Image 1 (tube, rainbow, N blue to C red):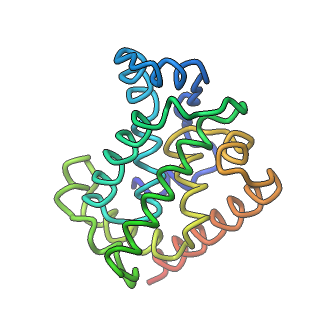
Image 2 (cartoon, rainbow, N blue to C red):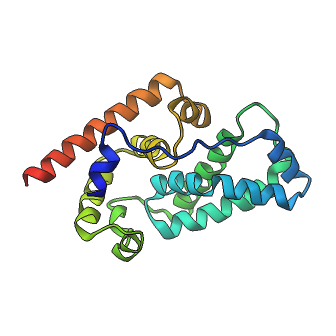
Length: 192
């Protein structure tokens, strides 16, 4: 099952994402190659992060596109501080917050909005979809973001701390607490 691979002790970790500040500067100078490189390097991680915030694939895609438009239009204003991904994640988080504020939407149980067809298209079987929805719903927003960034996008804990502008100890404790919740929920699913 997919779920057990995600929660296992030795998951295969994707390659870490590294964004150079000069890439942002080049985008600010209207370098289309730099923009394409940034998109290709960050789109999956950024999508996972946004999805962890809004928990709706369609809204996440919309906000992802808005984020890249904002990056392109504001890159000339970027001040190098050694944290280009923190800047990008902040833009995405602010756009997600604006989206919720303008739509006056409160997330009750949005994990149901992730369609079975979309997950099945990615090779996830129906039983895994049910378990995945239960598991994701059992995490708070910060735990979900940190776990997705680490396990799905391949970020190291110190990179997550740097990019989300949080202390490493906070990231580690939220990650460990989230993993414990996931394991507990999987055990409950197995017993049921």
